[in-house]
Structure formats: C-alpha cells, structure tokens
Image 1 (cartoon, helix red, strand yellow):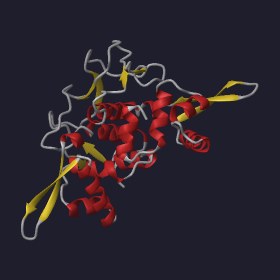
Image 2 (cartoon, rainbow over the protein chains, first blue to last red):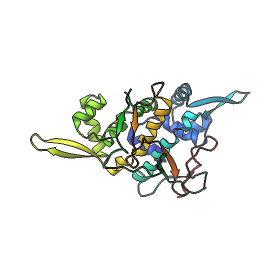
Image 3 (spheres, each protein chain N blue to C red):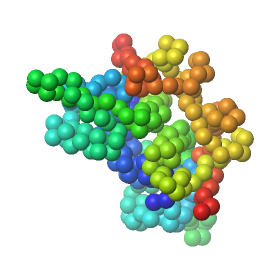
Image 4 (cartoon, rainbow over the protein chains, first blue to last red):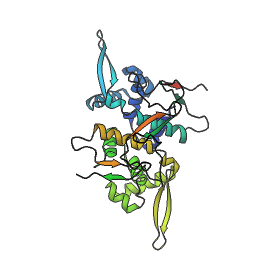
Length: 144
Length: 144
C-alpha cells in the first residue's frame, strides 16, 4: 500500500483498525470510499466498522434516505488518535520510504505548509528528546 | 496489563512488537526483565526479539561472557517510535483509564515534571489541531 502509515503498520504487525481511522480522519466517510481505498474484503470492512462504532470511535449517520445510506464520522476518541497516526506516518516516511521518498505529504491546515511535527512537553514547551535510549523519562508506577 | 499503552494496543489490535519496544525504551534490556514485564511465552519473546533485531529496531549486545548473556539496545529506528508510544499512552490515559486514573506517570527528563505532550508543527510551532474531523490537513498524493 502506497502510504507510510500502512508501511509502518505492516512492520509493526497492526491490523485494519488504524488504517480505517487514517481514512476516516483524512475525509473518507462512506463504505464504498473506504472499500476502494483499503482494498479490504467487504465482510472484514463491515465487521471492523461495526466494532469501531461499538468502541465509540466512529458514529454511523444516515446521509441518504432512499435507499438509506450511512457514513461514518470520527468521534473525539478517534480524533485523539491523530498524533499516533501522524507519528506512524513520520516514522514510515523516515525509515520505510526508500529511494522514492515519502508517498504522500501531510499539510498543516494551520499554516498551509507541508507538516512535519514535533512532540513538545506541555509544561516547559521543550521538544521531547530521548535521553540515554529511554522513552522520555521513567514510567513511574502510580501510588495508589 | 496495568499500562495505558497496553490497553490502547489491546483496543487497536496490536501485538507484542510495540510492547517490547515500550519496555526497551523505558530501560529494560535483558531477556529475563522483558519476560517478567510482558508475561509473554518465552518462545514468542525470543522470536520477536530476533525479528526486531533483523528489522534494525534492536541491537543485541553481550553484557557478560561466562556464561554469555545478551541485552537488547534500542536503535535510532526504535527511538523514533517514541512519539507513537507516547501518543498511545496519552490516548489510553484519556480514553481507557477508567475511574482509577492513569496507571503510570511519564516524567519529562527535560524539566522533571509529569509529561503531557502536544504535537506542534515544526514550521509554525502551532499545536496541530483537527479541523472538521480531518487528520490535520489533506494527505496529498505526491506527484511522481
């Protein structure tokens, strides 16, 4: 699949869930659009959309009455996965793109430029850096 | 598993790969440490470590000679997945933690405070926001 998110997930062992969310968050909402974009078996897509709706990640809304047709809208819970998808995209761009370079460009709606993103600490606004190969600091078990 | 990354991955359908990287990036490097942390079958762990090494995400280094013992060190390719793991952690914290709250606190080595992170555009330094339910802007197919 010509997408760095797909490549990253292929390496990481992920399944269809995040790819469906990638498409819905990129503006595809209808069953036939998703089916065409994903190249996924129709029964698998139907089962995943049902599951994502049950998990509160998608909402099914009728957009036509005769015949009745539905579209799938991302909930806040799904939109909050955007940083994960963007992280996977940038990782795939950097490490899996090969000589042809990244297959797609993400555009920041805020400034209209090709978006490269960076994770910053909300407290000090500094970029999150790795120190000594660790995540960003200790994962401290919470005192109960 | 008492970890928001694990919870997020459980929902997202992910397998062991990212959990092993979570542990290595949090400071666990030795086989028995990983086995104890993950509660994973030993043959599955061995196979995953081999695969992660082949993929260039981990490097195996001897840390003792008699008997010879190895530890696994994260490469740059693995460290670059930190934003994905942090994204999964924060998503799990927000959406899957339940009444007890987040099980572990991530500490920012830079400022020493509990780290909440935010994704910013490298160009304009503004937080990446979702507009109209889309990712952060169109995914434009690259002109070849």
